[in-house]
Length: 200
Length: 210
Image (cartoon, rainbow over the protein chains, first blue to last red):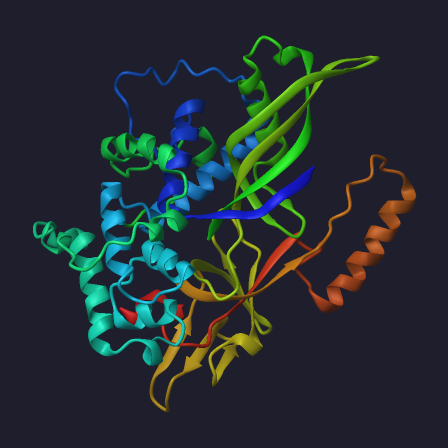
């Protein structure tokens, strides 16, 4: 094995999660997939025993992401809008990535994610960032006023998206997935020994 | 937290996979080889993201399998230094805290990276952060915890020997005895460990900051 490019691009948790869902669907595993009435769950071919490692990591990783609410099943356009909004601020790429992954709701988490936040941004700017996040990704309880923050003023810098959403073509597949799914984990037989509580 | 890595490798396709389309069989072999494995000095491979190119099949005399040169992209779990992650406390000892992320659990917060004025309580079996004279915050087992990655440690794990003869077992026992003095629970070093810290605002139990 030869490593050609050690870090070709970063992936956001959302992309990884959607990819995990694709893997599960391809292999008929149902850890975090919602039950699909069209498929017969009994009729699963166990030709994939050799992929047990993949099965374990897929189950654990998607379980972890669901448990930590890093799987917003919204429209990827929201992420585009968030990135465009964040491009106004002089943030590093990895800081934007972390904001997209974490969606900080409070000042203290924002400060944790951004290096030397107090020196680089004043309070108004931080509040603006938090507001942007909460309008695009409202917390579950307060749904309704979702579309307000969309019209971000300022010039849109498309470049910023490349870093976080490198595989645009894969993303499209993910959209359907995300729309169809409720994040109710249905653990497959492998997951039986490991019951998890999912707090949404 | 995750990144894409491009690798190239020579993959052996055993004859029983010849009925599958080339891509499917290559993907299966690649996933079998890399999924949930740590690549030294890189990180934990989650799965194959996509295949970039598949070369022509090569035959080797005396082997029914086909060998294919493949170039593909992997999804790799490799948090960068300074990244903030969330996990759950698996165990506490006087040396530090072990954190579990479900799919990855070799995360260690040593006591030197803990909040100032925090100490380990034997009775409660947990770390306590003494914020001021009155307020004490507990880091209990199974609490959801934020931490910052400080360092990544790779350990080149030697392949397991094929034989179960007497000699290697003896050395194992000796190793275990030595290990008991230093680290009672770890009998072998994990290939990939994250050293994390819990010192700044926003770190520690998620519930503290909400």
